Structure formats: structure tokens, C-alpha cells
Length: 225
Length: 233
Image (cartoon, rainbow over all chains, first blue to last red):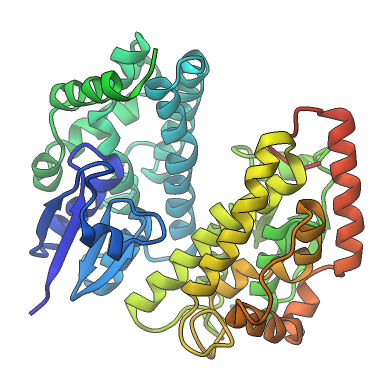
């Protein structure tokens, strides 16, 4: 009998990836909500002693850390309905763009939300990063004729990016701008709406308003001046 | 894969990430052409095939290009599956990936900061790199000599730059890594890697690298006094 436990935070876009993937695979799991330091659980500190961060997947007592590595683990441990494409080049594309999301896209958003002096450059970079992702989606969906980054099927890269859908409202509010989805990123716009209809995504993503309220409270508490 | 495979690796010789890609290819017995780039004057080929980052290394395989070293390593593993650089079980594979990722984004990044940054950032990098060396010691599994055991994996491939770079890190940081008494597993790893023919074929000479590194740091201190943030020179 498989024991699967997820340590995560409801508002974390990295955290959300894990339950979405498990839901897609139909795997039963226990969810444990983690708090910020200094209230991180002993279990988290033990299971991820290197980074002490969520998400962590604990499968029959063994911990797996780092959200994209967890997604690949889930794909291999429950190897039906594959999340990654079949051929090496398509898999490389999916990994490349997931890495881009984690490095470039996340970083531009982070500057908008948590910096004082880098908000404008964060906004500029985010718009440029969305341009790249729109291009990637166009390539991977055969010009928009297929529904997902994964082509016909909702997959690894879709799961990697969809949690950001509830963060756009946060970026726009704090950055005081509107992301021009209609005019500049129409494929991404349609893709978000399509993904939001999936049971796994509906179950896991918080409402943008609830996420915004939480982040504003955190900013109040942690940002000085 | 067909013997007609056309494989090219765009790189600069000191790049730690390029060394890892070269080792993965050599481990798999893949013949490839090395294309040396000049990062102060990037080639059309580099700019076209890595438009997002405009960085090395880039792998070209039969007309398709892949960039970002861990993505390249996973591609090499999957395009030429034998001999494998990943263990059999999903859990051990996750471990190999976890450590390769840690080595890339923490350990090697800190090493590059030792070369490119000054002042307080440099001080922090000096302390971090020793701590990270100790984290790697604790992370290694079993008796080795490789990271996860008796066979090479992506974790070892990611860490191979330490073999030629160790002297440079110590010089740049004016530090000494823990010795074989304190970090026996790391030193056994280093010994095993140093005598591995695929490793020898994949990394530059340590003295050459030390010289090159000192020159680069000198160049940065003269032309970018605040330290270099991104990219190579």
C-alpha cells in the first residue's frame, strides 16, 4: 500500500505543481500545510535538510525535493499517462522551458513583489519572458492547433506553469500594471482558460483574490520601510 | 543512434558546464566536434541557436540545438542511453538529479562568484564554497567512489568541473578545502575521477585553468570594477 505525503504551502506556485501532478495520475496522497520559518515542521527540516523548503514529496518514507525533480519522479514512479513527451528532443524542450520559468520568469515576478527598487525592470522582464513563453507555446502546440504545451495532452510543462495563473493578479496589483494577454499573449490567454477547466487545477489553485490578500499581508509583515 | 550523427558542442574551454557536457558525451562514446566561442564576440551560430540566453554550452545534434547544461545532460542520457548515467530506480534517479541540480545552482555558481565578484559578495562566496563542499561530502551515498555508488551518474558529471577547478577555487578564495581526514568521501571521489580516462579527455589542465582564471579576474577588476553579474568573458 503506497504511502504518499506532500509537504507544501497553498500559495506557492512550486508547491502547487506536486498535487496537480498526483491528481492527474490519480494517486491518493496526504497533504500537510507548512508554515514559514521559524514554524517549519520537524518533518520538513528532516526530509529536506539541504534546502529546508517546500515542496517535498514523501513516498513510502523516502523524500524527494525540488518541484521539477518531483514531477519527473512522479512520472517515473507511476509510469502510465506520461507527463513528459516521448522523444528526447521534445523532452529537452519541455525541461528547457520549465527551467526558464523557474529561473527567468519567477525571478521577474519576485522582483515585482518583493523588491523596492527593481519593480519596473521586473515588469519589463516579465513582459519579455511572457513573449518567449508565448513563442514556446506556439511551437509546442503546432501553431495553436493543439491545446497544451504538452501538445495533445496536459503535461509536465503545463503543470510547471499553470500555478502562475493565480499569481498574475498579484503581479498586476503590486506592480500597478495590466499584462496585455488579449493583444500580446493570446495563446497563453486561451491556454490558461483551458487549463483552469481541469479538475486537478480547479482543486489545487487558490483564487487569485485569496492569494493576493495573503501576499499583501506577508509584504506588510516582512518588507521594511 | 546512426553512425551519421552530427554532434557539435559550442563552448569556451574554462566553462564548468561545458566540461560536464563533454564528459557525458565521452562517457557514452559519442564523437563530437568542439566549437570554441569568443564570448566578447559571439558567433551567429551561438546567437541563433541559443537566443534566450546567448550562452555556452550549446549542444547541436543533427541540426537541432539544446542549451542549459542540465537539460543537455538529460538529453545526452536519453539520446544515447548506454552506458547509462542514471540509476535504475525512480528514487535513485531523483537523487542523481537533485545533486546535479544542487551542484549546478549552488556549488558551481558560488565558484563562479569567487572568480567574478568582489567585496562582500566575494567574502560570502569564500565561506559558502567550503560549506557546500561539506554538504556534498554528507550527500554522497555509500562507499562510492562515485556520488551514488560504484557507477558514474549525472551527479558526478555535474561535479566534474571541481577536478580542474579545485586549485583555482582555492587560489581565488585564498582558502583550503577540507582535507582527506575531514572529507574522505570527497577526496576518494576526486582520486577516482582524476584517473578516469573520460574525465581526463573532458577537462582542461588544472594549471592552464588557474592561469586563465587569474587573467579573467584581472580583466574583470579592470573593466567591471563592481564585479561581473552575468555572462562570461
